Length: 143
Image 1 (tube, one colour):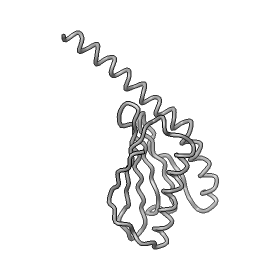
Image 2 (tube, one colour):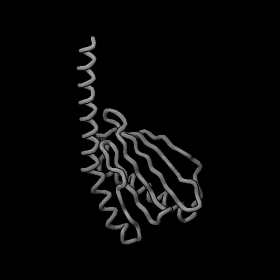
Image 3 (tube, one colour):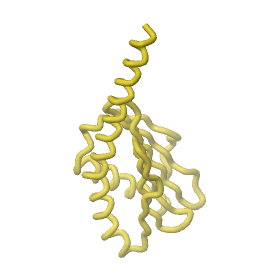
Image 4 (cartoon, rainbow, N blue to C red):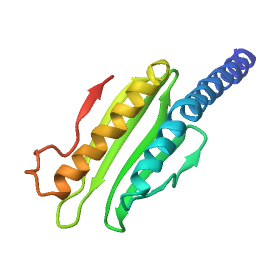
């Protein structure tokens, strides 16, 4: 039995690494180009864009208007074929607004990615402009 366990864990590690690689490849193919396209537009309107976290199975995209006014999207591979997206919106004088959604790696496409970025930026500008804050500390939505 110990030999089987070692072999099984070795195979499981390989499978998990493959899914993590697929996740990173999807972000490289879809999210990075969308982020760059948003950057071309947003930089002309005073935003600074960066990708502060770039690790295997994790990636973040930051849309920053000032040091304390920004949106941060964090993608994290959570299990085989699945990922988590956290959106954090920081506006001066307000508590940070955070949301979390779960999805499948195969559903990361251009339209979905752009929609997530647009929605996050819309929420940011609404809050920056003083729109009433919706009471939700954290939201869990299945994609």
